[in-house]
Length: 178
Length: 178
Image 1 (tube, each protein chain N blue to C red):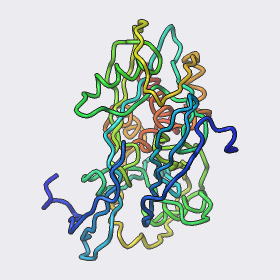
Image 2 (cartoon, chains in turn blue, red; image 1 turned 180 degrees about the horizontal axis):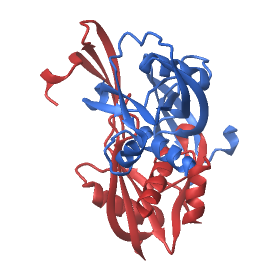
Image 3 (cartoon, each protein chain N blue to C red; image 1 turned 135 degrees about the vertical axis):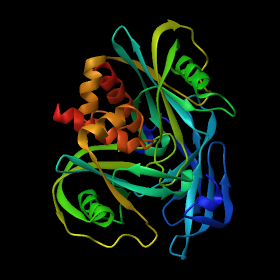
Image 4 (cartoon, rainbow over the protein chains, first blue to last red; image 1 turned 30 degrees about the vertical axis):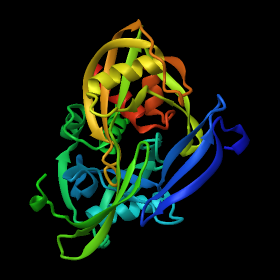
């Protein structure tokens, strides 16, 4: 969007932190009413997540998430490498996290939490899986689990998952299946 | 979770930034394989979002989101104030953003993006709306729009929304309605 069309105009900004994955910025902006405020923004490279079905079973990964200090059961997902097309990232992440390569159909792209980050999530639907593993990232420790698809749908509707993209992905694919 | 049960043990950490809304931390952790790595974490106070139905129409808010430099159409949502119960926050945010007070039913709680933030989102279902406005935050400029419920469900399934909680919330409530 062109700067002049933005209702909130950037006056100045600073990069507060530039890390391995995140860049934290704080901008001073002028609001539509003429007042100034600050906006804290987390810049993120973007991510993919994959609904992968094999014999009517959903592939899930169990892993420890440091940010929330607990283990989660999520659909496979990962950050986009620099200049990596989302489709290629989905193929790579599914191979790294589950060992499988599949056909990848794009089904949705959304912002995970646009109030403070530009993280965009590309959701794919993988089928026709064949075993073709890639080594995972050296700081990832992931276990793969399988849940029958209809049970996964029930779990999503009954709040048995606590990860947004997992619930969203399951319900979206369920809706497409009718 | 007790520190000793965590597969990733915190060795040291620093607060890199403490802002109006976010706190950015970087911890050095020991991995299950004995190696060290760093984890960048965004601490967030948590948020609520509300599926609000009035005469079979969904209430949505149109607003400029600075982090993604574009306008979005989202379900009403907002950050939890210090020590505010999520239910009270949902009542307050719906009044501030749409002018309506409703009965609030909790339907889901999930992490928006647990790879880097502890932001938790509490999703509520509001009905029996009555006009009872509260003044919005002074840096919020929000327009309310109504979309027939079945049209909103179709839009969610056809990627017409680009906000995760909006898609998730609509599909979850749709599933409960059968």
